[in-house]
Length: 292
Image 1 (tube, rainbow, N blue to C red):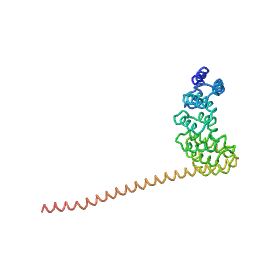
Image 2: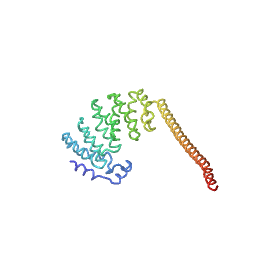
Image 3: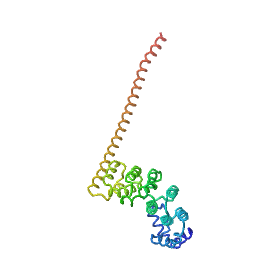
Image 4: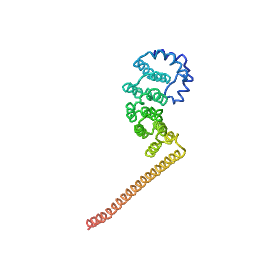
């Protein structure tokens, strides 16, 4: 079935469109040039066969397609994975998709969150794993630890303390997609705990990019938006002034060091002149005695 699915995509591929999609995605992945309705059509043509498979068999096909280079293969992999039950052991297997570089851009990562991860983290015990992901060195695992909760946070089915911990681990990273993933989750959390989200932003304002903050306050009232925008603006202004002061201090230290070196050099020259003046008469005195 794996090869049959690929063959079905190859038959309707549009290489020209594929290049356009790849260009839009910054050429991180190649694409066959299929639009979503075409991808869904291919999936539906195998849907009945897939339904008959055990979860382990479904995972084998999904894993094979996820490891292919084309973006459309990865999408169908996740459409198949959505039809499975993910326990802790199986979700841990999908970590390899990130670590081995098969999920390495926002489109596949966010589709994974929407089709697979959100079903897993709705269970509070499972959700705790996301704190480990939030601390991971892999950018897309960190982002997914936030995005996996985006559609759940507003439904009041999540442990808000855990979500704040996950956001805390993420916001300190300056990568754009880390910032946006954190801001996206905070946006949905603000619908449940506005006060808590504002306090979190106040505490961590020095870490926020303007874009990340904009995501976070998007669903707040204008008054709160203006307050947070000004807070970031004032924080950045203070940081810039502090940097200028630090630069000036360094320049002053450098000037003082140069002055010290110059004074030391002048003192050494003066000492040399004095020694010469003292030694010169002695030589003349000896010469005079010899003449006598």
